[in-house]
Amino acid sequence: MKYIVAIIQPDRLDQVLDRLTEKEIHLVTVSSVLGRGRQKGIAEVYRSHKEAGSLLKKVKLEIAVNEAYVQATIDAIVAGSRTGPGSGPGQIGDGKIFVFDLKDCVRIRTGETGGVAIG
Image (tube, rainbow, N blue to C red; front, side, top):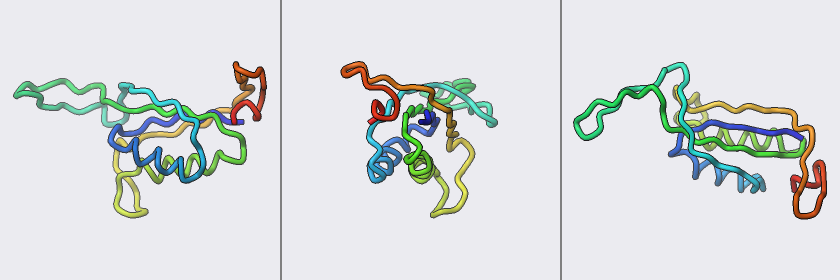
């Protein structure tokens, strides 16, 4: 079992969710987050006032999957979140994917554990 965390651009969320659905991956937790990467944020003009943009709006996806779905999940996230033309490289700020080993999972309703509890 793996726990996949992805940080992506907010405007790419629908495309990523569509790609995950195509791969039959439906169990996703989505959060709005703030963060910055190598670009260290950007400055934006809002109502003629320059805002210090040290933290940018991002979306965090959290997905627990069984081993058979790890690569399909990563491929779906990359395909849906990359902003470059066609299959070429994307742009700075497209995001990151982190993959963690998942020791256990418990479905609260039934008490099932392990891969069965993921679904």
